[in-house]
Image (tube, rainbow, N blue to C red; front, side, top):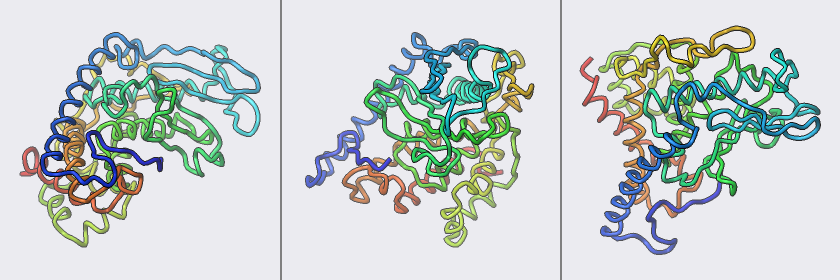
Length: 348
């Protein structure tokens, strides 16, 4: 969203921070991260959003209406959908529980992705992020692509909480969750946004496209560490990367993941999410691992540290949408990738 934010510990507009205030800002942010981790552990044990995988498999219709919004609740998600009119979802309901198969299929993908990202890969949940203190649930609004909340896209994630303490994702009713990983993709943006203010599209969209492999068939794209480092050191190749958006998944993020496959998130054969099936009988999770998940997790944590530095170095007055996507952020993102690559799998 375009709403302007003040970074944690940031001085008011017009009051430039001194070196000491910069140090204090960093210390405060680290303290908030520790608090967020503690809060996350409490939430995970007492609040259903990240509880045991088996608890994510059950959903319920908490609001029913023939002509107005309906709510299907499952795990940390509240899916808002319409039954009639131009925004309605397909009505098929094979199990007769008053929830359309389309919505249940979407919920299954979301909770499977949540389980893999949070419980298995160890990404910090949005519920444990200091940025989203007090977060209650993820609101998933299902509407037509023509609706202003989607602006013609398959999905959108909004990076600020509502007054009701919800994060909002919008998903187009035109997609088929059984063959489209947009819900998992958009949820991963919620995780990214809870870890860093950086939102340059080659990073955020490219990495979220990689994250779709959690529920889709994994697409191994192999490149040596030498090839990847060459791209990150070549200004001409970097310009191509910066302009790539979703295609950055195959240019960088998937090759990185498969350079370090042992840092992935693996599912045990008896993991409950492997029993999930879409209404057409297809499995919700198409593989048993997400290669490179631990690598990406460490990288996002590094981004969360470097965004403080970028904020000061670039003289940002706020983390506005423009500053979150500012090309000036690119060198910090690339440097983090190079450093982590060198300390892990870069010799391959």
